[in-house]
Image 1: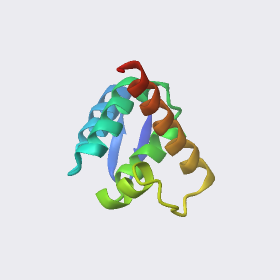
Image 2: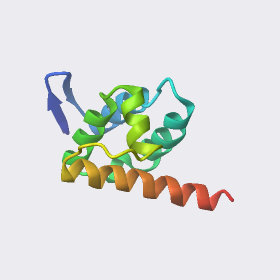
Image 3: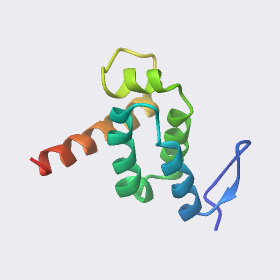
Image 4: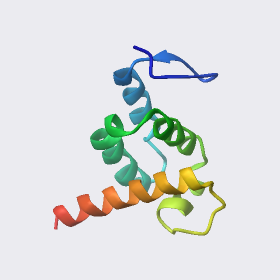
Length: 101
């Protein structure tokens, strides 16, 4: 069953797409790895296809731009759906952080 298709990827099933997305979570900044990798590992399968595509789009940004969005929470011009995804990522990260304390 295909889940995703665009010019960057062949048609992939959910498992392959999750693996590719996890690989893309490996960034040059530890803070991004600490936020993105657990989110994909634990919540990717619960995202709808549009959210998965938005996540992949987010991961195509430069590390410093993702850092500004997720860590410094600098005001960046994001569309409404991307803003919702960013808020979801941050809320899940906060939940995970609180559980480990």
